[in-house]
Length: 468
Ligand code: GLU
Ligand code: MG
Image 1 (cartoon, rainbow, N blue to C red):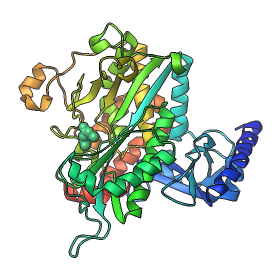
Image 2: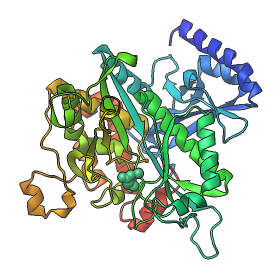
Image 3: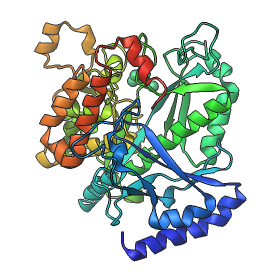
Image 4: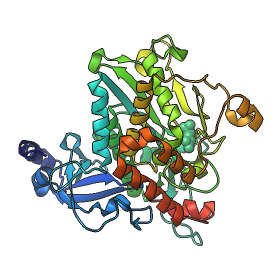
């Protein structure tokens, strides 16, 4: 980071101080997400924000090797207790936290002591990938849907510590459930609006105690930031109501899990004149050739992508047929059992609305790593001029094994180990992440596999229930 860049960052922080103080802010949280998908944080008192913006805040690189239980993998490029990195807040995203009075928030990127981006910083990687698209005149719009389950914090007598007892009893998608969470949901919508989050929808989801928020599409870095902010806000509002939120891929061993589906569209140009390449073309469902190549890239790389998008042992308890999780490596129009669900939007609004939804991914993922993987996969598809197979218009789970074979339908990896192997074989993905980060991703995944070796589904869900 050059001198003038540091000075500009300091000036931006100084300019924000008055408004932050007026809003009652006394501390600023500087979160980032580790390889295992857990948001870690340091914070500074308000007066230190200019210094933090200019020089960063010290944080050990050891966190690259952290696992879900806070144990540490001794990796080839991660997990060393020696050295220090600097956390630099991105003040363009500075937000006063409505549900945590006294606090503001700014997502951080990690730099070396010499001012270079840390080679394992997922947010700066994503920024570079977006810049690569921009160099070709392409932009992306993305959004992460957030599903979570609300449980009791005060457990009834006899319940296991950390057990999930749903705080809501109404039916899936039920108005009864919305009435039950009326005050809670209103507080959440109020907080998100105050923070400038553009909410599309809120609804009760399928599983016990499960809810969902979806938000408007933004550029990929902003979308990943928003995913973080929405979850932190949900956590704060939930805690404020004396409840607990689980974003885990599988909250309990039975039932439907929490997804964190990613919506993506590829555009030529930027701003008002941009043209959505997922619509208005001669291809299937109106795809343009570039829109198809991008989507085909996503589909082709799904097995390896799961190592970043479904990164927990628990992810594979969720990613099973008939759970709307997209367990098959197929694409289809509005098909909720397809890993890649194509969405045209309503007639008359397709140029704005058409996008692909990657369904097989979940909230254990580091959203910056996942978005980076998706962009790298789409990019590989574009470079190769990849084409899509026939779309699938049925639930592949209703076919026999032989029927699926005949239709060329394959299942996605069914275990984290299989996903990691697919990732290691995927040169386009590992090159995009770079040797250090790709190695750490595989090591951290294998660390979690070893940690949960031999655990029953009940033990796996209990181990990761409250951490993401
Ligand atoms: N909860 C489902 C999942 O695990 C998704 C439900 C839906 O289609 O919104 O992905
Ligand atoms: Mg949903």
